[in-house]
Image (tube, rainbow, N blue to C red; front, side, top):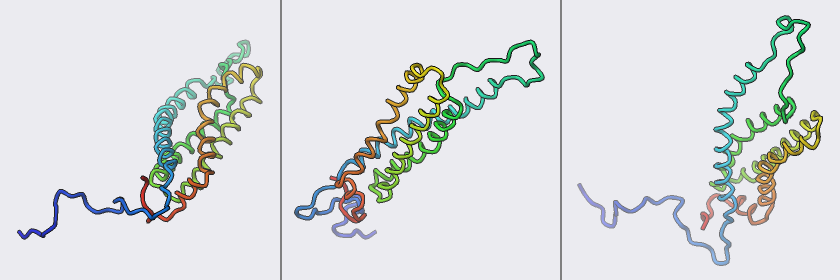
Length: 193
């Protein structure tokens, strides 16, 4: 076996992630996409697990909660009442579809944001707009179906407080010039410092 002079087997391999010399006067990349990417991956993970469990339990709940067919209920007996729900059926469908479609998209966007991919600039803006739009649609559809506006507002306020800030923060952060420049820079530039 012949050893090469100057070869160190314990040295890390050379990669494209190795630090590169910075140009004089060059500003380092913004860390906003990295932080938002980590948050996006975390939030999508927090929503994916209950989503998968919720889909199974919702299927069981709705099949068990169906009212009996009309021929099974005698005419003298009143029709069974549905429980007081905070969302209308259409509001629940909109919110469910939004969470079902936007959560995996947030995971993909988070991975792209951590890697500073160019397409995340447009993808994050579209995702945040759709998230705000679906939340507003859910609130409007459920408020139309509600009979007591005050109770409805009290029930919807926690959901709005929990779900609305992150898309709004993403929209505001990704409209900054420095964040846009760090994402639109060529992939051969230096990594985050």
